[in-house]
Length: 168
Image (cartoon, rainbow, N blue to C red; front, side, top):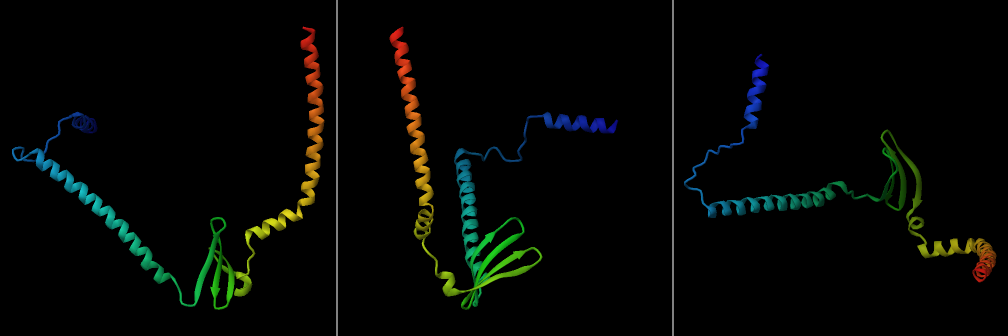
């Protein structure tokens, strides 16, 4: 019975649409309302700007704590949820590391001179193109032959349609 009474009271309180303010209505004016609105908007913008500047400052100052004098992370690649491959420079060598949740394993140790001796993309592309040029010639020949056969069949169909139109 008490639960039903409480539910009824809560339902009635929620259904009442009148809202009461504990403010003096005599001192209320449109000018003060506009000034309050401008003040609140200014404060909101100020808080957002401080948050952005604070985040930038923390990011810049955080790099100082992360960087090392003797090691530098060159590249990082995440493979899956718990596997990461890192390229770390230590003195004159580049270490390729595999990092999981349970272990760190050295995959390779490369001298820095060999690691930085990378060919350009254009060189790789031209080598790829040259190695498959004979296949391209073969496929071009097949494509040319297929086009010739299809053109011939199209001409035959066109002649038949022309003859049908003349008969009509």
